[in-house]
Image (cartoon, rainbow, N blue to C red; front, side, top):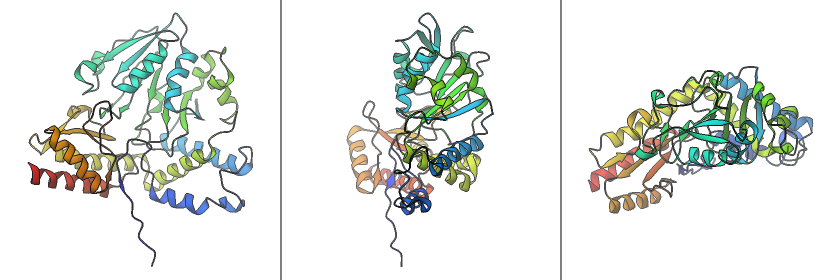
Length: 365
């Protein structure tokens, strides 16, 4: 009898849970990738075997997100954090403006990098409310002459998420979707560019996906080093230099898993059900658990909350860890509790965590 694999309840914010089926397939193919006599990590990135992996991953990304033909799909390195600087390098001139919608720590970091290249400004901010909500469309203030409008679709630290996106008309909209890409269907045509680190919903760390409209590539600054130009990666199908081959392979396998699961509509339904388990426990607790995000801004990826007093909260986190719930501590900058429930986190883990929360309250309430 095959020994049962013991898997932790992995609520880490990133790197985060990967589908077990994907890990098992990677394990099977690790030493001899599809009868090539070597690992995918040993293949030349110029080989036909790897080009098939690479191009299949791009095709699956296009299919799942229904990406229009006028967009390129690029696999880059450096994480979303490199994009914070690369975007203004390419699209901001010293005297031009860009609008940044402030919803958390990552939008703050993006704005700070943009200040090195142009005149970015805050189009809206909920910082004064400790980022408990997403700004309403009526609060957004941007200009028709802006180079772009930038937003962060999901905020891992504060547990807020855009449920729909503004129509910015002729002003290009750029979205950092690092922590919720592929968690639900998205109308890509609303955006001039979407970027995302892979380590939440797409695979291991090391790959950054950029979905960018071709006209944006054409208008970008050409006086940059080759590696910092989107045009370089577009012309070379993201193979200008040696790419993170294993990461791209894993990304492709995760996309296959999403297809087999039923696509983004089914993934979105599962994510709503998983988040509902935990939010319901918070809402029914009569103040024992206190959610950070306002209900209409709640994230389906990162559930953030506090326990009613500090002593109990420390006990809650210690007991959660003892029971096998990993990564439940809130971000070091804000404290509290956080359950990151990305695509690959099973429903069963969320149900088990809910039961733990209810039992902890029963004993300590």
